[in-house]
Image (tube, rainbow, N blue to C red; front, side, top):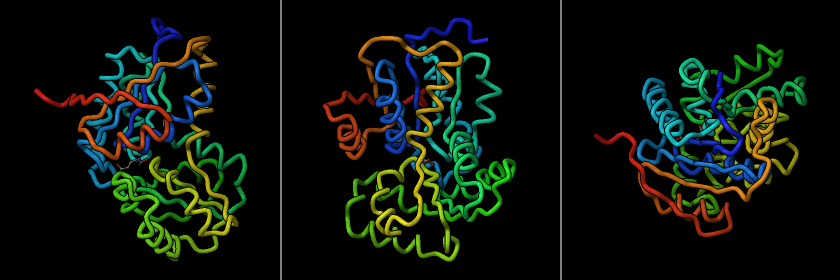
Length: 272
Ligand code: DGL
């Protein structure tokens, strides 16, 4: 399997929008020699409100696109797509390409460090409805888990409103919900939410441990590449960014993350 993959081939990373950039950024920090190709499916955003069938179709087409771009690995930098489509992607592409999602690395991390704690999960409607965190955590013996869908946060972040006082009020409203009472740990189970991590930590006066999947996923990427001898040993890392529909927020936030001007290419892989 995966015989013709080469270490210099890029890592493909995708999400519905800017959220996956939080993961892409962590991968580039940890693995500066790696080339990356990012795909933000802004035309179909938000994934969290779509049916699981629709999200599966998007995930398959994007993975095909990243394969055409000769990626050695695809990182599903989206919880909603990981919940709906990761098993399918493994079946369909697992013999051609390495695959990493954002859920399994988080489940392993929680099991390792917080197995005896009360865990809260916030995510999109799609991720919460799938109950994927509850079931994967229960499989590894972590049972005290409460979850809450917080779908409006994605819209605020995509609109560039994350620092607005309105966003802070909405975060407070969500975090006061009965589902999240008395938790010790809060998992940000949507890759958009790290952008609100400071606001969330401040709400809890830093007394609740807030986990996001950025570094945790980047480490899983490193381990998987290492285990297959596919880490890129040298080079400065070239980064390409594609979106299925251009949004100003995407460009602004992408530039903020990378600290430099980036070239953003519109690529509608669903046309014709
Ligand atoms: N960032 C995504 C996630 O981790 C999806 C947000 C959305 O498109 O609804 O779930």
